[in-house]
Image 1 (spheres, rainbow, N blue to C red):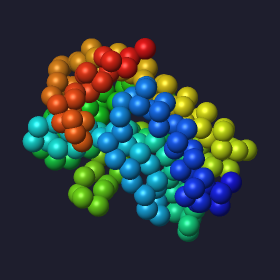
Image 2: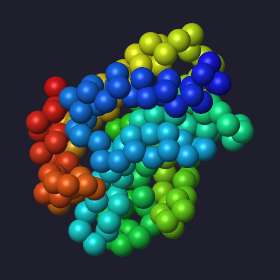
Image 3: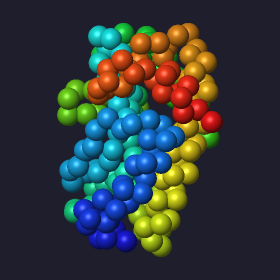
Image 4: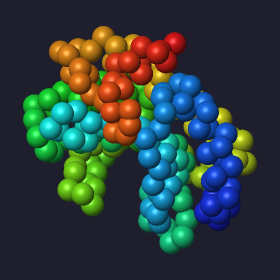
Length: 186
């Protein structure tokens, strides 16, 4: 299965299946990233001068640093903790740490980006070898997306107004996480 998901056409077919579901449950994705370590679609969010605040990523990841193979499939939420307004960034991290505790299946890890960002990665992933076929991967990803949708009511509650002014990291720039959560919350 590992070599199979390294085939871009196989990943493209899986993404075709999950993109409409992702849009329906979490909102329109903002970007796609492909390299040797990952192939994912993402919903990135920014706030005022803070720029990137957090992102929801869905796809394939090379967690075992195997050459030419993606070792895991699933989702992660990256919460940036360095940069402008560290106190508010800590509140985002505390929020996701609390509300993702039943969703994650890996211990939260520190991450760093090539752009200088650092923070925490909350992930729900499985090794690609744990799946017998692509449909099992699709089902796992859809289940993970549904569970993230379940935290939208907590975002809507907007504790300490931390989600006020948080917008999609792509046009339309005025679409807030609160609007997205209100429109798509179950």
